[in-house]
Length: 203
Image 1: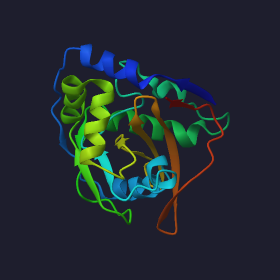
Image 2: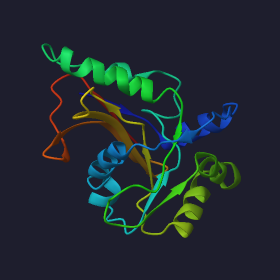
Image 3: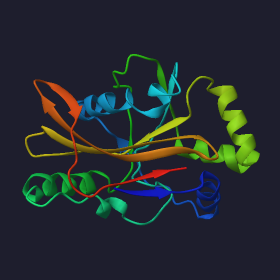
């Protein structure tokens, strides 16, 4: 597995330097996707390690390394002999993430949560700088463990296999993200082992 390390500070500065082109965002109304999200979020760093009492979730879906223009989904490659299973799911993932989608209040994660629009998150840094932005963020969202980001979900044709990206930012040098591959068994989604090539990032 390859690990892509990055500095949050650099990422934010580059993001703010780019000309902002707003993409039309439509509501993401897929009950199965929210079941996948709920299975993933309860095991992410903000809940598992930071013990967040209320989650902050980026309102719009995003992809791996959201401030990069590179199509990093190519780093997720099925193992030999498993291409027929996972290639269609990867294709579905790419199709689902062609444009940002707006998330809805349909998570089932056992703790309160709320949404923060991407534009508002970026505005914190434009106004306050990197360190000041995080101070303001945690004043408004204490015990949140930072902000979570999610892609749209790619499903197999029978909707029993799913691929999703999940990441989080918790400070200027604190964050991480990776792909998750899940399988639905007896009505419940659970992560399964990925035998092929993958990647992750950490800051």
